[in-house]
Image (cartoon, rainbow, N blue to C red; front, top):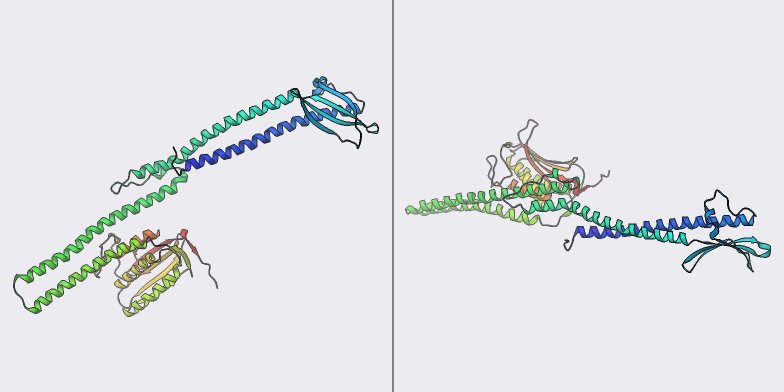
Length: 433
């Protein structure tokens, strides 16, 4: 019924222990309260008897409820030597009878005291029955609580079992999102998180397939070109200079293939970087350092890199290598497509979601109908393999961040590459003037 580490088992053990403690405490308090109330009533009854006798009044009044028990009283006068004795009361059991005795001062000059004894066996039997009833009710109540706890634990675990059943029936070819509307409100965040994970897995499988197909296509074409050129070269004997030229063209094609292979290796390295231990770092400091490096490159290409960072500092727990890969890809693409004497802007700002990092260029813009984050997708007439944004998207997913590429809407040609870091795992350093 229960696994080695079972939430239901822990829940039942805790609720049973707490129920036993609560029932025992409540029953004890209830019984002692009833017992004390009855004994206080009997004590008050004997005290009134003693006061009436001491004041030479009638032993009882007609309208008093305890007059029916008058004949169970035993009254006598005793003499006690020594110091004065205050009013005292004690209980004594003899031959299955219980007696309650009250010692009350009567004539202190003669050391005379009233000793009033009352048979309270009936009351004692009543208290015993009450104790048995309370004990019986406790057993029944405890059993009902256990049954309720088992039912409640099943009800609480049922959504988890449903999610487990749905997930166990999924595979890489059949992955459907979970309907969060059928889940209890408390499990909706878990369902949404699982749907987000399923979407990431679907995208990963989709891009992996595209990556394999694209890799095969990208490598097949240059290999076919190399083979064709070699076949043409071998058709007839040629001069040494022609052979050298053919080898140079072959080496150029091989270099292009090496670039493709290097980018594919970067994908493997990035997957390893996702397993790195996150560090507590200042994102703004990383952006400033990266901007300083690319500012020199921009100046060397006749371009300008403008920087604007807000807030002054933003601390986050993440893998620095993944963040560097995204920012570096944004800046490389921006400088690649921005003409000379134009400007690239690197800026950050804080919003309700977290920290927004943007790289704005003055290039040719993008085609909105093309999925730029798919592998081997190229934009514009610049050289490249088409894996940069694919790697950036993968890194953003690993960081739990949002990445987006869109055209500028301020009347200037160019694109805006943005990275949105979630502030739930981050904290902001206050500003100091």
